[in-house]
Length: 427
Image (cartoon, rainbow, N blue to C red; front, side, top):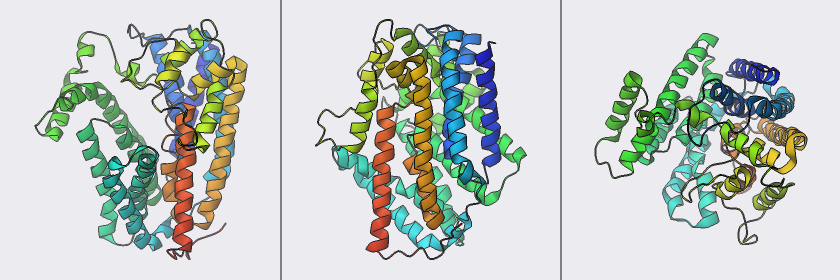
């Protein structure tokens, strides 16, 4: 194991321990984001280098020294900036128990989310995106109700998890279930103060569940997307049981083509970018960064050339690899950083990106100090930010637009609905 590889591994382990320690004390969303990135950008590639999958496409395109020589310094700078930026909020004991005074608001917020969940699919374009953000209000409402003194209202919180699971089974898409389950666990931990032993046991169960899910989701999707008419819960449980007993149940596994780490490892895409640029494609010199900035602040009718989410165009340009029109893959922000600015410039960009996120976080935390209800909306704002595989245009677009919607909602609620946050607590 090379020097940068060892340092990267130590950094991710340290961050994992820190994240566990902060559970139950704060809402460590940016720590979670950085941990997920470390697992996908560093730990996944380490496993791939040590035990190559042999897949014809999902492999590391550059040697370990070259890959880690860029990714680890960039990740370290990003991590240090993030941890320094969240230190103040992580050490402050947020009076989250005061959410018990806002059950009525929680019900209204939950109701707004349910309504837009029902009508969002019928709205076009940009309106559909804003409806998506508003539909996630139901989860913010569920978080508020979890702290209610009314035992019945608390059950809405667990009902939201069941709802997420049902939607995941119906669509065969499990991303939202996983992300919101982690967010819910953060708030559950603040209220219940679990021991480190309990947290570690939970994480072990979650890791086993996620690993098993990775092995079955393609087989599950292939059946339900072809019109499976049976009991989807039964199908899901059966595939899970088969995977636990006999391993991967996909056709690719039977042919020896893929493994769990192939699906989790973002490093193969980043390594393809390092291999392709500047050898076959010149550095983009900030082209996609400026595109992301304009796309995040201008609506599509003012910016008809606005980038479309999905990552296909950037994936092809940055990696030089083919990708079908029906497939969506992101090059990740760290891959985008290298493709635009090279090794040194990419490292600096990751530091600047971390600084930008911590400034946003600090501003939002100040709002939380004056309005504790706002804390339940933070997961909505950072829903795309914490995904390690997502490119800058998607992250910025969601972050900026969701904050506009959330802040406007609170302004409207205060000034026109006469919502009163009288139990707010200042530092």
